[in-house]
Length: 159
Image (cartoon, rainbow, N blue to C red; front, side, top):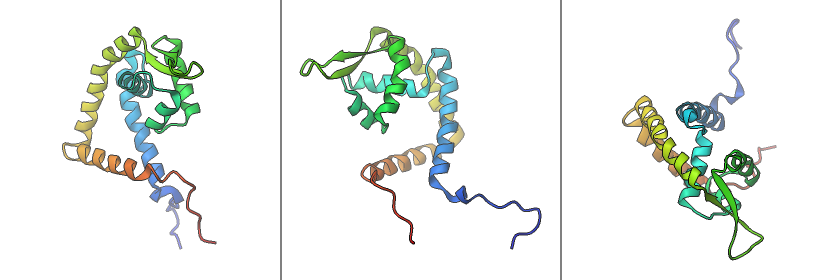
């Protein structure tokens, strides 16, 4: 029995998903603040970086690389397309398919934003600590690799 005046703990206290989402929001806020003067969010910066590295990638393939739903990716691409930082070009092998490419303006914006991203990265590493930042990245890399094939249906609870 609970003592009077002690609030009940939410059931989500031990939830890994909740912790990851909260941490992700905090980290995104740090990067978004750093990138704001460049007119980008961290999601947009990541998209530009992936498109630059994977020139001519299709939306479905980019969504898979970024572990995003294609609909969410398309929604996140709209501002970049609207600002002419990215274009959807016809695939030379299949005119019905479209490939993502950075424009010259997109390359310049990405280059201009890189120091801001790096500043946020260094700040985060400083806040997390010299040993915790690399340890966190290693755990996240292992988790992503292990979870890559675990996207099937959620386990069922016992009746």
